[in-house]
Image: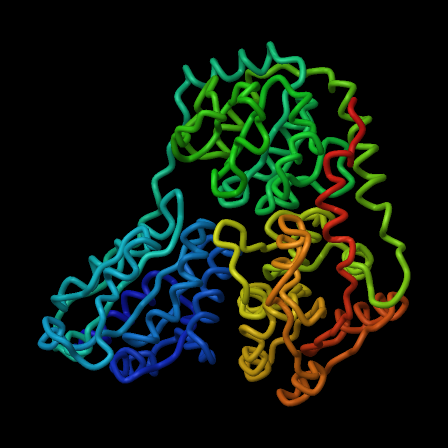
Length: 544
């Protein structure tokens, strides 16, 4: 058989349903081999969007999302999405074409060393040089992509290898190994927690990846320990749960906001350092750490370890639960929670034109009723979502965190709708982020998908202005001219709604969510309170 046929059979064996990408001259044999396969090639308009789709697919399913590009510019266009998957630990397999082996030793049309380019943003990165190694390379790539901590891998298929005659068959797919923390560390951790007066849990991305949200909730409830989540662990406890102290990760003073300054022991569960560095929540390294994660802790002066439970996060929590005694909830928690609820919702009803971001978040929450998957782009709106929006379920708020890349929202919504066709999906983006990959509305329309896009419209890079004003008290080079977004949407056959006043927002959201089509809501936003939020965070919560 042809080598590209064998490659596709190996992908089928791995359970691949979709490949997001663009055909090119150097991957034509591979694309041709897909014709007789059940794998669907999702044709996109930019390879960056393809990588974002694979990224979000991997985060939502726990299975590798697969993206495809040709050599040269096609491959390098994947890099932003691949970097996002690498830092946010989403399993992704990137496949790129390449020039034939006979010309890669010299200067050649569109040829650069893509293996070298991808080296720093992938867990594993391999060129296929001999056709009969395809089954081994494919199996290793998918295994590496899901092994803790998951991430992006890359396979390069030169065009002359793709058309080679070969023999072979896919290798058996085996589940990733599952390890358990040692009994001695479990006992040491339990003793430390039993002696603590004011322990607190920091839940991170690994809780979501390991399916440990239920175990974490049961542990917290059984032991009366409050929980704070990172951006990527939103929803591990529902928003009205008495033990949730919401989200940390926006500012250095979040350790006060979420109670870390009052704690005497911090239990980190599935926490990745890229989410929010310890120096921002363990001021002066004053609190000892119980580390529960798939890998040993990174060495950090602000992360003093009391015990390290290395292994499956869910199993670590469950094992610990058997030895930890039920505690009295430390009294400061209820007071802190009350203040948080009051402060976080104080501006929900702000009325006016343009619309305050607090009102947009509050109406979004009311309209989606705790059921939607929210894909947040990166920009000023992301910080308001991170601070104010609290989902009811785990893995229902997808935020580009470690890489923090603009342009993820619309491609991510496409992937989310393919994974969960019966769930409402909402892409929340700024006008700057939308214009980077908004063309993928054409892809969504062609696929017959239905989701909502909310644009925070201010005709500038609002997050950069926010940073500039904080640092220099002035801004520069951040304004641009937007198109008419409703006409832009209409050109793709997508319905658009313009919102200029807060009173128009909730009806527009409810109508869009109930619609069985793509709806773009263009909201004029008033970001005048961005700097105010930054400068008042230190006084946000009264000292307890």
